Length: 178
Image (cartoon, rainbow, N blue to C red):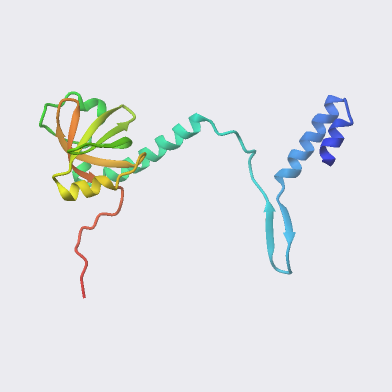
């Protein structure tokens, strides 16, 4: 209130600019409150001016997240030869493929689960049959916007999924049971 009163009391634009700049500098300095001897509590501090978050910020975040997780998934032996979705169009039907993508949508059908998977180059539908019980259980755990690896067989503009790979640490050795 005191700051606003100072600004309202003057018509000089240069004086208003000086007051605003002083306030900005004042806010950049951390305010420290001493609780008891030897302890410090920082009440307010930030190094840069906050900015309005835009749609482009979300796009940048999700692209960055996708690229980091993709690199992790490509370390897996089954996904080393993964290709982008736009290159899947050149594959023959029943040819084995591996792809890494983000889940756009997930819908349950009478025969299984249908995912719409996207990467920066495009999107494609992926079907997981409920007849493969272990795979059906894995596919039920998938959530929207999750980045996963998928292996399967090509169909006409669809992948028939054989396995799902999550960006976790794979268990290569069976744990000893005592």
